[in-house]
Image 1 (cartoon, rainbow, N blue to C red):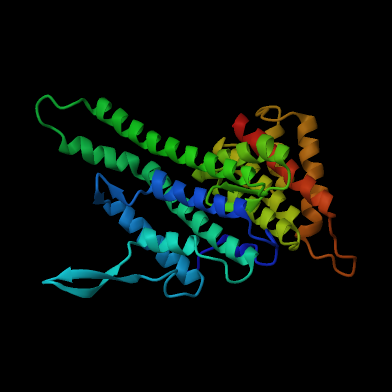
Image 2: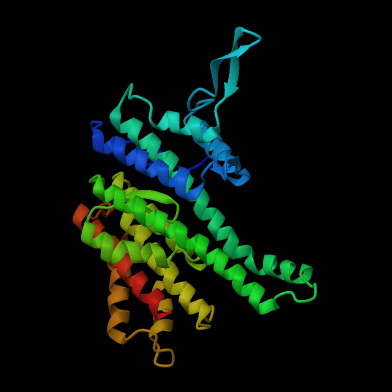
Length: 346
């Protein structure tokens, strides 16, 4: 299975042209979040089964994406004395050590490629943890019901008490993960890297103020599964912007359109006769529904008319439409702001 990694998404964009102490420091700090805060290999002096599975899977995925059989040596030799004689013994490294040895090895080629590959390991590790947290959220009701059915002994906690304990455990794991994400993003800023991790991906952030006031709350809001398509299209917009790909603003507009459609559908305002984004905007702006005002409706329609529509249809013999870099960044930021605002109202 193909896995989307940071190094491949940004292979044509230079992140670093040298390797300095701050680069080494960042990689080690990020790795320690994975190996100490998320999945410590040993717990109370013993191998933790969930950590073994995590590091084994992470190594497998990362080495495969890099076209390697192993990230670093799996085996090492040491000397052991037995019956007054010294014998060479072979032993296998733990997978967390294999990953750490690879992440901290000396550069032998391009600093940019070296850093991006190792950031890919961090990205995959965080994504695996995020997927685990999300799976807890999705399966909680089933797990709780099974637990309630099994715990019927005299004096057992009530069903509501058991449910609340399960919810607290899940929230504690989610809160710890959010703290790890916050630390990783703080480490990026500390190392003066224009990067931000959100919802499974490390992407370029072009403006600190926009990042703090628009992007960070935006990614938090669209992490809910109902906004999955919004999340995917906006990530595509950023990737295309950062790689100078075609029509990134179009994908930002698609994300905004999906948001409007989801709200219309969830509110029960969709009638089946809609012919495009403008119709769904009318659903939100109607006097009966009053979700947005008339001037907001007009502003949204203008955005789709001038940003989405020219890129959603073939130009024929006319000149191919294209936005400048500044216009593209504006379109993405406006799209994020609208989405954030609409979801909060929802």
